[in-house]
Length: 349
Image 1: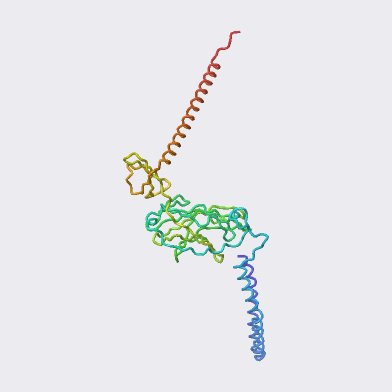
Image 2 (image 1 turned 30 degrees about the vertical axis):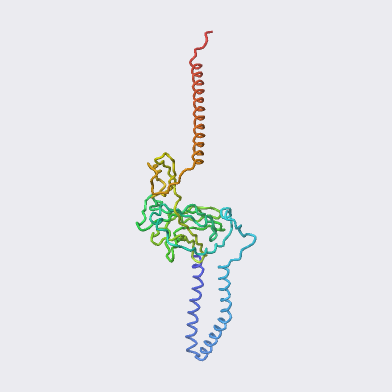
């Protein structure tokens, strides 16, 4: 807006000068046509000479500007430490981290694709620098529904899954800067890019002031059919260098179930749950050792160790119960003594 106001007088001056030149040419063509032709030839020669002189200078300026933008010179006095922890300690790095080399992606395993909610997502980096910002990845996970900042629940398409990304963004620039997930993030699978949607309100458009941090959360709706392992979350903004964050997909660790066979021997059954959510209830132990999972027999050393731990736990529990009983007994005795003192009649004078 300021630049527009500055250029208004310049445009007005150029327009008025063009009108004056047009009137001068009209008068000169009526009085002396030969002088007008000589005047026009002189103007053309001046314009060509100006292009010859200014053209290379302007081209050199463009080349220098290009290299200054894409290959900034780091100041050794203010160069940040390579340690990732400096991102949240006031680093003044304004340079973007170069785009990571594209990881070798393969389709997600069919067993994981069948129930993506049982899979875990692990970022290749949890802290990095991009575009003068310190980025910390707090959490990234699959979800079949999300709750927006209005409190409304949105369900994913049956053929898709949500990838929810939770970030902490620190402004290491010298001026305030706004980081909006839906403007700066894309999820890349193969040659397809999926836009990010914010999980925050209007506050996300506010600037993050220098040295301060802000929480940012967004999600992507990714078709299950095209999901790869790993996939990429790309940080980018106009002409700034981007940063590709690889996200690895893996099955969550199996859980252990204990069972007893017909001979009374204890065994461990390792199995993967059909579905695993935060509100999932523990599975009940099977009635027998016959299960689709592999059965691992328990050795005598393991059985003796379990017995020792159980006995130690029992002794500790008995000691705590004894201490609690003594405390209550002491409390009752003290309370009865105080009651007798309060209820006693004063001695006769």
